[in-house]
Image (cartoon, rainbow, N blue to C red; front, side, top):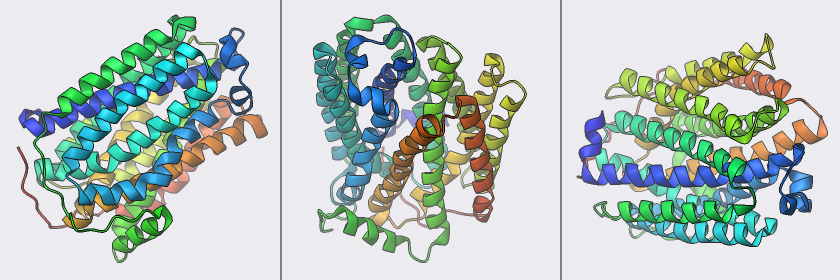
Length: 422
């Protein structure tokens, strides 16, 4: 499996997307910890003064990050078919440098509104990157190694999320009024990721004559027409969106859980680290089980396992050690789910529609993530639920949805085979 990294383009893409995911999550985690700090005794004065932070808490940055994917995803999906996906990867990595310069400005000026605008820009940059990143995998490795390549991408992405979240927590806990230092680090990481991406060999555009429309709503529904007749692909896309909605909700709940338990930011960040390590283990196991195909039965298995993982906390909701075990098991189950889902979404579309379908899937994923913000706001602010009760209610919801995915147990990728790119 690791031998795939020796292929120049795939290895460079994996490394650059790792640094991008690390950087984004280190920044996003820091912003979320700043918003959650209002529940503590010593929030930063410029955050405490912000009405946006006081009224919306974590829900606002989550929503602002997801919104560009919903607005721009259909357009960037078409772009990924019209233009070389490698060029889009280069552009997106270059854009990240500019976004992190904005983060540096926000931390230096200590203006919460600029910080929220930067979160929105980071979402826009990621919306450009996503369809090309996932759409190019099959072009780089071919269908035979698609499951293994996705396993590596998923494992490296989760490792990036894990390490980035921990670093964001460390920055929040230690830099305090000197957060501009974190901004400098973000700019450096983004620059290194862009430089690595330049090693990728340029791939040809899949459909250079495809018209580029600027109506995201019309484009979204036209992409759905490409899914017509393929119920497996449609269910895979919807199930992926549901998963990302719940994963984003759990991310907010865990940060609130750590604050509720009185844990410092760095310790709360290590809770996410347990989930990340579990995802790496689950992704590796899914790659081994899938072999050269896709094991559709892992999809409902992963969701049922995720639900059962949350129910551990019924016995001792305030036990930190048990929470760590629960999160690790949740991550392992998530890894089992995501590999076959991603393979189905990448493998079933025709080559000339793959970028568009990846854009559609990304929009659906981020509609889910967008909904997670209001769901968390409803539970925390409106219903007044404790993080422990929200944690288990969310797990129960996943368990109910798992029955719907039983229809994907025997799902297979299409027979279309592509040649790998070195």
